[in-house]
Length: 544
Image (cartoon, rainbow, N blue to C red; front, top):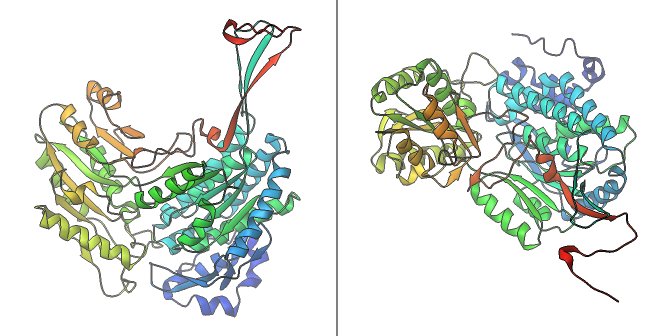
């Protein structure tokens, strides 16, 4: 099957010459050739060996080589030179200098830069979506969807660039007025995870840029080529607008490279996405230097299914939530809390739907489920299932690792369903894999809400009901304790415009919507005396 994905791109003619023997040596698999990965990499400017440090159009790196293997077929996609301490220092000096220039640009003009970036993403949606799918392993449609999120946050940010408003506040002192205004915060450090290798970066950068900040991005070492591609795209926009180096920077490597940012007092805000364990380390380190942390950590998301729930909504919502991205979303559905009166019916419907799922190459759109990110994730998945069975869980749909033709990477697993109790240790823990736990509740919806809230994480939640009182109870102060609470839709997926994030061990951070542009700025309160007197607050007298 020959792809037509790039036939209409104006970039094809420019980049076709870059499809060299070097690329052909890098990508040799049938899958990669069949689905046009060679062309995609060329269009995105991803080379066989890439400099993993960049300040925009300047690329350099002196660290060890990081190899990126696709979980789709186990093949080497490309290599990235990692960032050394000296490389990092060069980045920070360039970024801090750029900030002094960039913050002086009027916010609507900064919004224009983001608008242009969004348009470039529209033009390159297909090759970038393909790279996301091939390097991370999510389905091609999800790869395209992730790039669409990037486009959407750019559109959102452009509008906000004319709405960075403060407020006027009445003063208790005559002849005085108070006001509140917002200023750029400085260099924003971004640490992203493998499961959304491009979207999370854009959620932060699009807002940070319109606020007047500059960004340094440490991408996941499991998806480094996505950072190379994104940097190439924004670098072209910055060059076209004659903007200085340092507005968009990338660094690459393991956790030690991330530590360079978390300990750096020149970075007032660190936005970190990943595990709760990682978040504890980042949050503590940044707090010790009185910096700010925006933490997007683990989820243990549940759907409550009440007696009035519509199965036509329940089944696709629960199944996609559980198996989409092979269960590697922080918003993936981990638990179904089902009323005992409809338990058997819902259980049988979910189990039946699982029998229809197809597992395989995510670039082939006939498949529903792609691979886990690597064999370490596979081992974690296997250990979790054994733990669940040892604690008394009853397996309804058995999991396991797939072998044979098409599964040579060793990263493809079968989604599992296990009947369990909420108090099981393994149920209390987030496993980044397609394991779904089913449990019953009896009585009123309050009992289900108690189970839903009875975990350490607080990211996403949902209730399936046609009963208004149940829905409103779930959304009330005594309902879900999560940052996201949905009615008659699943737990997975975020929509640009709403503030994304959670409570408890999810970290409390918010991204991508509502008024959280304020998180990328510093608040300043001003008091102006326009009288010729100096009255003091609270009626204090100080006569000289």
